[in-house]
Image (cartoon, rainbow, N blue to C red):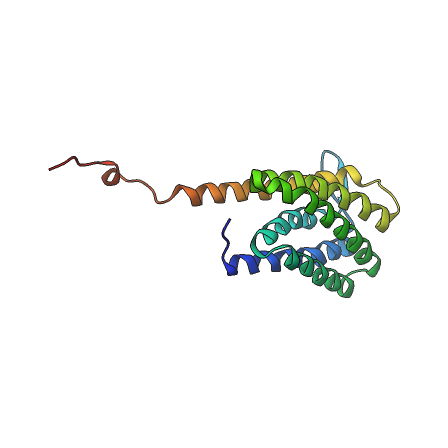
Length: 184
């Protein structure tokens, strides 16, 4: 998948921004409803988006750039949000990223969407378990945490799929382009 430098930089910057945004949301908003009667820490939607942005960033800029982006995001989180949440987030992101690398890389040959869906499932579970236990000492929010991340991951994958489908179709066909003239 070829990605422009602008798109790659944009994905990396958006990914970096989701890390402190998630921690700030938890710091200032606490828990939010995610559907079906479940609640989750407010950063759940940002983390779900981060899972997809991480994979897009890896496609655009490579693993090393993603690891640097995680470090930058963690430092920003530590400076802007509650330090305890930032540390729980740092550990959860690091472990989830390693698990994601282990799953994403081999599946990437089967296609971007397949690799994203499976690796994000692994990543969101690792991240949720670790973050909730470290940040709150409990897994009470686990169902909501998983549900919120799944909502965001699926939404992002649908948007990405639609964008890719539109991009691969090419220009619209008109009546004049459908008419094929035979030899004169």
